Image (tube, rainbow, N blue to C red; front, side, top):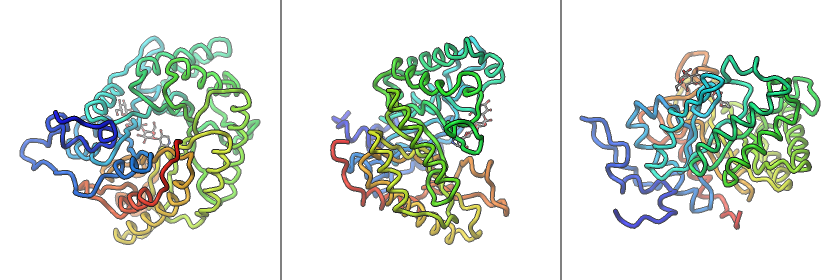
Length: 375
Ligand code: G3I
């Protein structure tokens, strides 16, 4: 096997070199030769950034064409579902790591790094959990889950979304925290417990607080940005071992309130707390745009480019992950469908795995981004 540099390994450029190790095309289909243009992660690496995508394990198990393109474009993968409690914890005394191991094994074979999502969330929990979350035993239950899960994937999962979607000012709880089973059972310190447990289980993994709705110049998002900054500052003041803010960046291609100066200032405010930033779930929905594909693709690409050109110059930003690589599968078609029921086009590759204007926008933003200086 040719000597492969670490940089090349992490850039996903080696997949074609690995031959058999890459996901081979299904019998009878011509192998897809990687496009000539360097992939998104190869471009990101030139700036000490990274690019990755979320994967659904059903795609991983069944769609060879999709999976053959992942190493061409990505340096990171994250499970849409495979690390969530509902997947990992079928019973109180049972861990089911098989789906997550599928993803981690695929990533290892292709030199990709893995994000774990998410150790604590208010959704996708097994039915047995909330009844067992008592004030006197809940903290141990949470800490044990995190130490067991993070310990199991120690050094094989390099980022953890430790707590997902902890804020919701509309819930009227102190400090704008979301009214969740975790807050009700354990109080605000569930966040502290989660980060400390993760740090103890794998001090090498990046520990991220992940949330949405902080991208636009809208009153409800301005409130969320303020609540998040206050939360981050209070966690840092309490020496909670948080290292980064995850901005989900589920964008809306028809949203007109994208203010680049405001986005840049928010990133700078987060960075001033000594925190890094990861764009963790980026996609651009088109359910508010006309049906015409060329019109949608152009609007989505322009919107994504405007957002990324505001975010990527911030030295604290480590990389960009899109919530999927291809339009073949997006949560948006389930959760936020178009009125005309047309499939949306929120991701860099189309259903034929061809690069779209959104791919070009991502590539252009990465090419324009300044090199991180020792970040
Ligand atoms: O229920 C089956 C389960 O039995 C099976 O093992 C698994 C195999 O993949 O599939 C499960 O089906 C669905 C799963 O997606 C498939 O990926 C679940 O029913 C369904 O609830 C789940 O939805 C996910 C959703 O989060 C809830 O966890 C979406 O895929 C995922 O895209 C979405 O992602 C969220 C982020 O975690 C947080 N930010 C918002 C984002 C979009 O909603």
